[in-house]
Image (cartoon, rainbow, N blue to C red):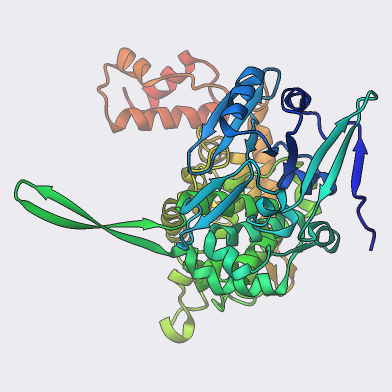
Length: 523
């Protein structure tokens, strides 16, 4: 195996401004500066990163804060963590550096990532600081040695737990005892799953077994008793608090499925994470489907195939997506969740074949409950639009319901030119669903999908920018003004009728619209 050099020289570790390190060494010659965590891992993997964590030795906390405040803006992130968020004056305001003294964690063994006492010590050896970290690939450091005239920097590699070897082997391994690492912070379980999907790495066997053993900790509840005095009466109240907040779960869950939907699906199943977080999904296993329509297997296999189709060559060729929509990914995951709850069979229910009547609407309700329970809208810059995701689940059968050629233009407008939700995403979930449906004669035909695309393209030509449809020719106010109509359902009927005629090019002006309505509705 290729061994890593003890010292590394390169022009720039990133595009970021690390000039503050040079100034720090001038003011504190004995200071030792270490780049730690994910940035080191990503550097060795030759991947871009925006998250830079530094540990600084031999500078007292107050002196470090004073120095940083003269180099940029600085904020202390909670006394319990003792981390400075630092932005150099010419740095990226959206991505501050994390700067801390060497730290030692004293876990309360609750499994909560905040349930620790942090002890900082500017004299602590960097190896001791690294020993508290989660996985070996995150427990490496680069020590800033010196700055050369040619604008290159010498960094010494600190790797006490052989994280570089694990990078080469593509392994995620806990630092020291994996059972202890997870019990200190149960959210590390989800982080391991996410890193596996993000990097394409395998979780090392002992780490994997410990992860599965501790998976139930994701739902652990801490209960404390609080005494409340009300006049002369002292009442006791039991307070319940999740050890791993749903907001933390949501962030890791969404990041994982964004990285690799299929591997995430399999890892969340094999680890027991689905059982703990979304047990409803497991009802899809062994839920039968009519073989003539779904030769690919049960609902579980169909869902996995649909997720796989999101990253297929055919999907990319059709939609040319640079960035996946999380609403689409989660809607695909949950699109057939209603089937196990609406299953009817000839043997049990005397139906003509296996049926799932209204599984789309039932699934949408289930999807909403899950998304709200896990707070999937909560992560900043990552949270999903729950309403749009639920809408995609509810409407994913739109192309199957009827004859596309007979569908009204106003109906197509309602679904594929929705004012708040993406018609493009509705086409995308229809595409992966159709692609995952294998009949006994082969893959399901795309005839209806292609016909809908043509109908949509035809409507787009009506708009000036060939993307949005033209505005309505008339409004409710026009009807009330010209026909003395009062607010009510009749106005809605008139507007809907006029819109359909407009989209069929039967009328092209407000005057024609009013004349048409006057005649048709006898106004």
